[in-house]
Length: 423
Image (cartoon, rainbow, N blue to C red; front, side):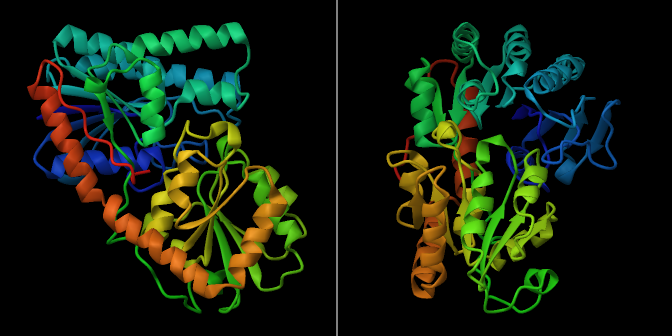
């Protein structure tokens, strides 16, 4: 099968959407499919084009198993505010169109586009229609709802127009998939019928991310953290959806707890303000985004993983970093309201506290810090969940079958069945 992957973020060696797009493409290529990729130069989460790539030139590279990747020139703002983000997305949409049209001679069997950005959907639909091939939209974030929910875009009239356009686009894809049961429900509410709706959750390589014993060297030694100290780790993007400012408040409330250290690993637009808020807190340590080969070591450094999430982003996104937290076999504290899917998934494998309440978060951290047995039990439950539900090969094998059905059946294929335990 020939598959054209259209994903602005594509970086198997990093994290987030780019990682999942990259691993999916490499996995499908390894199974014998012919996969080609159209993407922007890697820029996330630093919001700066990575060394060795260009923001102003087209580039073609060949990756693992002969995977072909075209990079379209893309303007990347250093401060990704609302209007700058729109211009950024438009630049990729326009520059990637020639690459898309060039694939007409190859004629893929299916074109698979990842949202965000939804901006690319009209061109993909036109391309698929002209060639008579199948089209698939995969939603990692409901970016229209999130943009208004987080206050990045405002105006009732603008919201109505944007949601109407989104609904019109969604109705024209042969398949629409997303990463959690709650997000499937959200897609269903936007008019996506069962025959076109697929659950395609994020995954984790449970052989690469696995429980690691606490060691005296590695990150603890590099950061000057005592071997018996309790490490509270946040590893991920530092952006608007995360509600990351809560960590500074919680760290301040726990400033007198000498045995609790916070490690914040990642980059993004909120990093500078977070570092400023943590000024004077000696046991808060910052790390830049770490290389993929040290990810298991990084996650294993934690005694407690924290997953802050803003309330207004609930059920519009499912944090991809959660799978790695579970696979590492360490306890998790997430901020989420009862009834959200994030709360349901974490409930038996960690603590769930209200979003925006630094005092309750600090109390939860303090409770787990002095309860090693409870931390171990919660971490073991998370690891068991990752083994049973989040294994990379199992999820991608089911997805491959859904792709094959989509291409083979020009009518309505049976949707991938929902499994209540999946995030």
